[in-house]
Length: 219
Image (tube, rainbow, N blue to C red; front, top):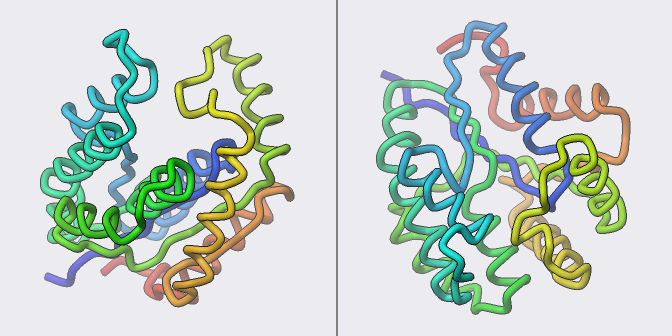
């Protein structure tokens, strides 16, 4: 059986990843393509438990930065083994909301950890799995903050631990995402989401067709 296609969505908080990954999944399924839609941290029962712990300090104790890295990677290791690799082996397209680039951006550029060390432990966690395509949705820190405030006002949800980080942190991680993209243009498609949603969605689908191919038919 032909192996599936692995596409990841990355970007700062409030960049529209969750919306656009869902829209792409809907359009691919409409073309007869089997799609597994998933997210990180999360994607498995263990991963979702780690997600709650990381985002909302449910234990009453914030993780130390190194512990934070390892918790994210524990979730990813489980996710790759239990969800991503099995789906790819079945020939499905896997669309994942965040993957290894988020570790490099948040824990590397944001927290200041060495990128080479992060890449090494991430490769161990993922068995060196690399996406076929990464869609980086870019948004300025000011727009990101504005969107987060609007979302919180609509849902009455408190900001999570990462969303509460200072503006300087979010500026560093955005710069990190863009630097990572510039270093790997064959894999990463950068699109700004400070435009109409439908225009962005159409450009994402066009990028998938251009870079991955096969988006117009089932395998």
